[in-house]
Structure formats: C-alpha cells, structure tokens
Length: 445
Image (cartoon, rainbow, N blue to C red; front, side, top):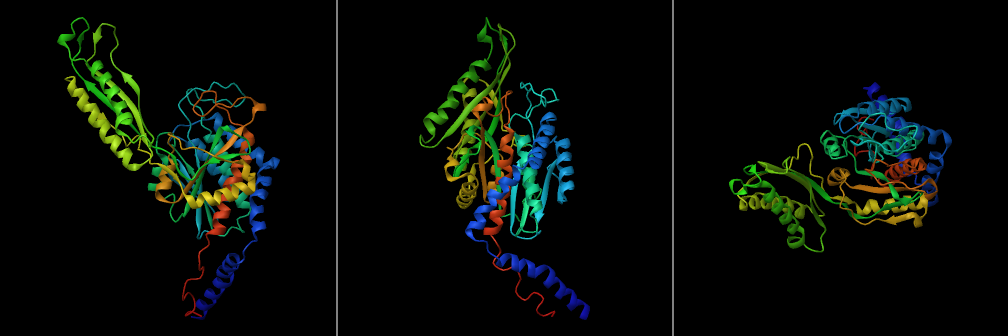
C-alpha cells in the first residue's frame, strides 16, 4: 500500500504538475504573435531549407500513384525515425500518422498528400521524374517536404507543446479518396481539428489565399453504356443507333443545370468521355459516355445524381436503346463539399497575419474543383488554404495537372512555418478546462 502511494505521488509530481503548470502559464499576446515569426525564421535557416528541398526532389524523381506510394512512405518513415517521432503505419495501404507532443489532449492534425499523377513530365531539369508516365504535377512532393519541415520544427519544441500534434501523411488524394480510408482506419482518433494546404501558382510568394465556409464543391463521376443494334451506315433503318441516343443524352444532361438548378447555386455536369465505333461506315452496337457532376450542397448533389441516371436511361429509351449507368463509388468515391470552419478561419487569419502580414491574406472564391480533405472536414472541424509561390523573376509557374508544372522551392519554408504555427496556436487556445480529473489520486494519498 505504501509503495502504491509513493508511485501515485511520483506520478503527480513528475507528470501531472508539469502539465498543470504548462496549462496555467499563459503567454502574453505579444509572445503568442512571435511564435509564427520565429518558426518562419527557423524554416528559412539553410539547414532546414536544404533538408526540405532534398526531400522534395527525391520524391519528385520517384513519383508514385495513389495507394502505391511505398517508396515515398518509406522515405517519410525513415525521416520520422531520424527525428525520434513515433508513428502508426500502415493506414490506407501507405499512409502514416505521426505524433509530437505530450501524447494527451488537445489533439490537432496537419496533413500532406503523397500521390503523383499519371502523366509524362515535360519540364527538363536535373530532378525530372525518372518514372515514365508518372509525375508530381500537383505539388504533393512539396506538401510532404513542408510537413516534414514542420515536424522538425515542432519536434525541437516538443517539450513546450501543450498537447499533441498529429502528422497525417495521406495517400491517393487524386481521385482515390485516400482521406476517407485514412478516416475509416482511425487516423483522426481524438483529433479536434485538422489543417491542410496546397501550393498555388497564381498567388505571389509570401501570400496565402482562402475563405471561410464552402471552398470546394462536392464531386462525383459517372459512366454509362448505351446499347443499340449495330449495322451498316447506309441502311440505318435496320439499326438502333446508340450514337444518336448518346448525343441526345448529352444535350439533355446540360438542361439539368440550365433549367433545373437554382441559378444562384453553382452546379456542373460535364461529359468528358465519348467512345463509340471505329469505322466511318458502321453504326456500333454500343457507346460509352462518362463525366463528372458537382454541386455546393449535399442536397443538390444527391438530386443531380438521381437526375443524371433518370435522364440517361429515359433518353436512351426514347431512341429505342438500353442504358446502364455506373457511378463506381468504390474506386472513385464521391467527395463531399469542403467547408472551412468559421472558428478556424479566425485562428488562421491571426496566425497568417502574424507570419505574413494581414495584407498578404487573400480572399479566394469557391471553386468547382474537388479536394478529398473534405472527408476530414465532414468528420471534424477543418481548414484548407493555398500558399502562393508565384515569382515573376523565375518565369511562369503553370497551374496543377500540367506537364509543365514546377514548384518554386522558396515556398517550402512558408508551408512548414504555417503548419507548425497553426498547430501550436490551436493547442494553446484549446486547453482542457481541467487537467486533473476529479477525485484522482486523492483517496490513494
């Protein structure tokens, strides 16, 4: 019994009291405002900058597609091991979740996506992709480097953190819905909020662009096979023409937005795939069409999905054809609307203002593009923003998904410092009301 009392006393003195002291000690507003500035100075130090550049270039040379990021994941784990940061692996095939801080609440996450795109790089430079037909054309290599840079900063200050920072290295953002699989496997267990970023070629270096509320649209894909009866083009009366049926379907789909949607609410239905026939004088047996649909509310998105199926099947029937509509949610899951939390927006403006100056926080209009960060935001409060990298003295920087896409590596310190600053500020501003549970250890002593 005496031993048990001594163990409890030691636990209070060594563990509980420091937490209480840490929680009770409040920094002045001036000290809090200096944290992002110090982190940016740290991120710009040559040693850390060179580290991030090196990581980014290694990943860029060896791009891997969604759920295939095995070497990328291996590199990240090696760096986390070197820093002494514990982590869970694997989640969602190649994903990693690291932990810095006390191991207790509050918990805040910062995320980077890891996957590349299936395209050939056209930029000629020393670190061009070594894998034919694969390229980091959306900056995910830079995102990983930034998050590892933030990890280095935070790990050097881990004794000062008043909670736990969760590092989320996520696979398959590009259409694979990797965020959903990470969530399903417990990546955000106990996490109260999550932050994510993306490099942007259309905003100046040293600036950020964002907004509160809806940011990216909900997105889904569809494919339809329209079947008729093939034959010679010179005797169409003996055929059932699926090309004509598909053409009517495509025109009718455009009416869903122009005549059924609220003109004040943005929606999109686009058919980008049309495959049918292989000869000038033959009517084929079937035609395959496919496309995407997007909306800024869950209700509108569900309505669009329902009407797309109805229009395709019924218009095909008018032309005496049959149609099968597939949404293929398993391989290409529907992305929900990405909504930036209004409270996190206030925190972001404070941190970014301290780091970059209020004049460098730019308003970005909602986009019809999709981002699987929205899965996290559907589960917990989340915040997503763009980090500018435009520098006209370095030539034009193409937007993402271009074979000529380049990253201005001067952006790396800004991303790392923003990640570290946002996480640290969140922990400071969301301390538990009571660190010591009622009645704990009292009876034992």
